[in-house]
Length: 170
Image (cartoon, rainbow, N blue to C red; front, side):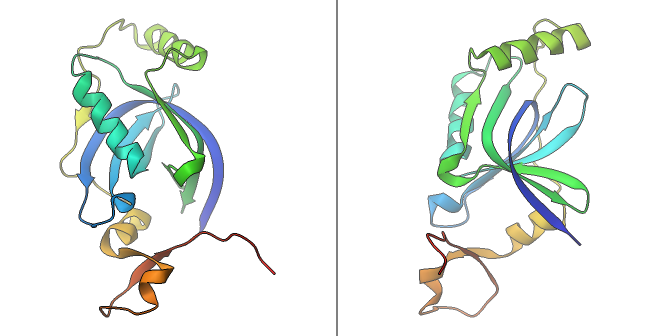
């Protein structure tokens, strides 16, 4: 069981969208799972946290007639868990662009049209209510996320994922 994490820029067509997980009181821990597909047809699981999740939902609600959704995640965290890639936003470091008029998105969309011969798909996006997860995502979904300060005086007994930022190391 090995996990490898690196920062990457990722582009892909959104092909599947799961439900927003907003069980935690803290919005920073809310997450939306989706799948994107690259030009070679490789599908990658993506988890958007906090504002990124709500930005995607807002875009989809405001653009219900759009047939194709292409996103770029700059400085995203690419996790490779037992050979299976997944991507998530990396808090304030990641930038997300949805169907933006950027040269990269235009070129990607043009390439999709050339590959699939579909100019304006009616809808290439499916909404997946029974989202399947790998072991890494199951771990995230089955354990509460806590900040380190929340565990100084714990209110409950349990297993938690600790989230923190290291500012320096002595």
